[in-house]
Length: 229
Image (cartoon, rainbow, N blue to C red; front, top):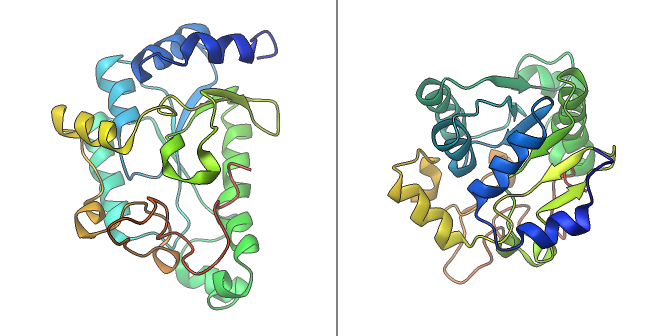
């Protein structure tokens, strides 16, 4: 990955469509490319699997604390797209009950960073290592929050892997326009007032005029789960 000049790439693709960005990725990174998804909006998955016909590995982090609607969306997506799906979970844990027995009840209230280290950060790093991933695709956008407003299309992660944000310059409205135009599956929680969907105990609906991610970690200063730090 060191052969890529990120400054030049970001300048080249600043006005590119997500499909053009993804097409560049699958052409220049034929091995070791993956997508990460939370099974909220599936625009990127649809672009890869349907528009570009590139069934790259899809990494999903099941924290044992997701909404039932999220797990059902994952099941439907796998059936619709025949995903090359790789689900990762906390090491040595098989259920939400087992998680509570090992780490105590409501760990997210006592130590939210430890909760995410166990359920998301470590499983993601393990997945990237085990699958020998050189570059991974996210669904992050600049308009999601103030902390993401300078998000580049291409960046390096902490381990030196290429990290691609093909939707960086797309708006929330563009995502929905694409979703409806192409009849793309989406998490039904959006129809219940949620605008950003994470773990059930840590996610609430948002009110009109609130920032898209205002329902995540409401009442705290936390803005990211940790996998994108």
